Length: 176
Length: 196
Image (cartoon, rainbow over all chains, first blue to last red; front, top):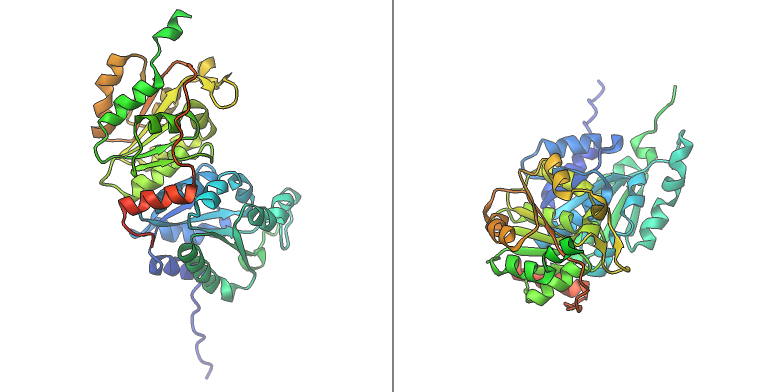
């Protein structure tokens, strides 16, 4: 008789548990399809304050303020939003604020929309140039551990860390 | 210009506001607001933002959410506020009761040669904040109005938005410490006690 396959926790649920375990209190985001499940988990929780933004750089500044006040936070965004953050990341780098960014990629793996490619292709380099430690992950089974490791790195060493979740993990739109 | 001369002196206005601060926390936007706050007297409850233009109000929002029992003030300039107008919408949606956003509006970019900002051409920042959903907004044009409104900056249920029209006199710089890491650690240690 075939054994029932153990139900795997989907990676967004695993990231959410990591947030709770890691005392994350503020989650700033610009809505994104790749983060939809994680965002709805955060919105439904009383342990975290989910804050929708008009642009990603707001989240960079907000989470600096959160840390000043004793809260840990995370910024969720799509790779196109990384371009919006660059100057505000100078605040993070100059002050050595801890900042955890979780970026869902576009324009990277199986992309259909050519307009997504310029920012998607330069996301990792743009972040690195802005002083952010970049941790790409393209295997669904390693997403949660990568986020957990990035969280420790960010908050223990007072640095900005970005986990880039590949379109290979998220899935890409089929335009038919 | 006679109308100009009636506008408030920014140093005096900031000093009047901060005189009543008690244990309120202060974020200052880059440029003159940092010099104004330093001139009023340094405090470990001040965090001077020397860069990151457009981010001051959002830093204050994150702080206000983390410290709901403390009043959080941001004092910034019109140019800095204009660069991050979306923050007014984001703050209005979050409705932090303990946050007050104060803009010292000289209608100029003071650090770059006193070029006119959009407020000089009629853009009404308090009107934008009100439209976004701030429950209390004001544009202050006189000492009396400032004195009447100042207690509300600390006591009214926020978010409060207050635009103070000030003259564009060039004042001597009063520079606070500028090492970001030091400023950050000083503020957090004084407030939270630990960097972990």
